[in-house]
Image 1 (cartoon, one colour):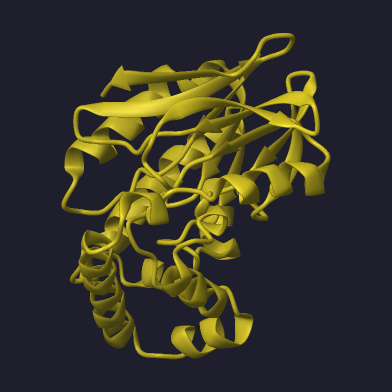
Image 2: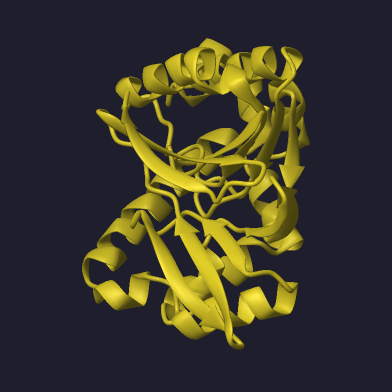
Length: 252
């Protein structure tokens, strides 16, 4: 039995090819896995689990999409695949209600888990991008429980408008940032590995799929970066006992 990891699908009603690709992947690829880890930015935006109450009345279409995805995940969980869901920078308001509907367990960012025969550090990856000071300031606010409670207390239409505003602002800001600022800070990677006592890290967020070889206090270490899903292509990491992780892309 293997473990599969995915990240950065950015599901939203305007990307039906990715939705259909995920549903097909869950039916044809995931059945062979004992566990599935989703490392953040599963949805392009998430304004709170009460969005599910709107159903077809949700003008954004996200509620119907989320219900469909949750049902597909629940079928996979009921068939024996353990599903773990980590928050990303886009869907940090995902809560226990959605997780329960999906048969999933919310996973803290970061988390150290044993995959195959090795302890591995799992992260979304945005906390490693410390050179982007403006984003790190927003991240600290967005992960604050009091701030989240204030947002969730807003009427749903206001939250939908705020989510669109934040996406627009993020896109504009990122277009003016240097490429290295939006990537991880190498020293932060080393420190995270050292702090958690591991030599392998897996994350997403940067949309720069790769396997990076590095050295940690004289010991070889690796950082695996998952890619983001596009209408024609998805990314996964597969881990089997006794084997190193395999990063691969595949057609949807």
